[in-house]
Length: 147
Image 1: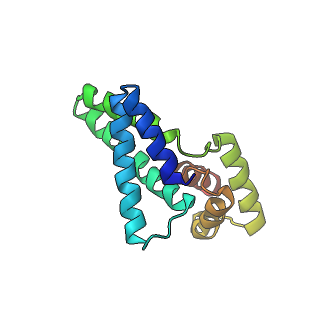
Image 2 (image 1 turned 135 degrees about the horizontal axis):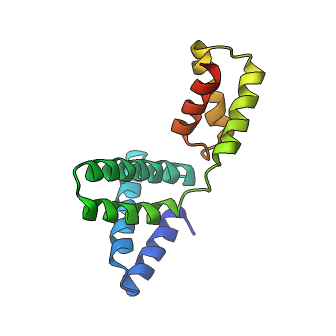
């Protein structure tokens, strides 16, 4: 079963069980996945799907911050629920300690010594993390270590 078929199946299951929020969230996800598939000319991998999900997760996180600043708690709560649905499809992210260990090993390996070396270290951290590293967290840790 392809990645898109799996999500379709889960959306239909959510529809049958009356989970409106999950249904709506998966419907949005499917639309974005199909857009990506069409823009790529039909070739679509699970990695492409993860990219789309990460984009939607990032949008939800940004929306939550904006809604909370505007004191719109009901909208922020809705975004948080959608975020939980979307994050279920992402691989388990590395913990902060695991990211710190990875950053430390890449710094030692590359011989990085200052903030000017971030451009040399960061791509290796993201590559070795293979989609399980939060780039923002890694960048913050890297700046602390090299700063």
